[in-house]
Length: 128
Image 1 (cartoon, rainbow, N blue to C red):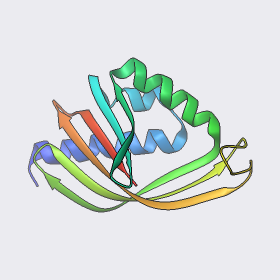
Image 2 (cartoon, one colour):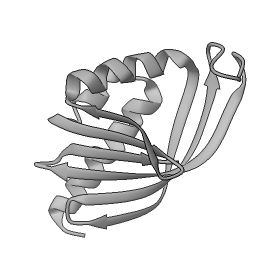
Image 3 (cartoon, helix red, strand yellow):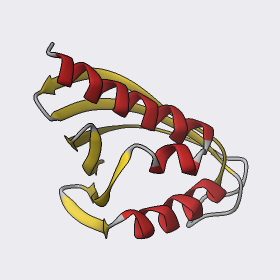
């Protein structure tokens, strides 16, 4: 792995660590100003955000939904400025949400693609 690739991996790890702690400022420190976030479910986009302000607003809302949450990175592939990872995700709901009740645990596997520019995340695609 090159020095730049190692630095990019460190950025992704720092972002996920901040996410797990619900440290919104820590997450934001890893993002480019014009970051693009896409969430895909069954191959279809269900959310697209552009810019740190929109990302922060969504991150703050999402953090309040869970009393605990954790992403565990698995099977990482690194190619220049693109990092693709499989993720084991678990969370405990803090509030009733959709058809689920507070206290319920959610566990799933997903896949995320991080695109980095100047060692900051410029695009994040979450795929479920």
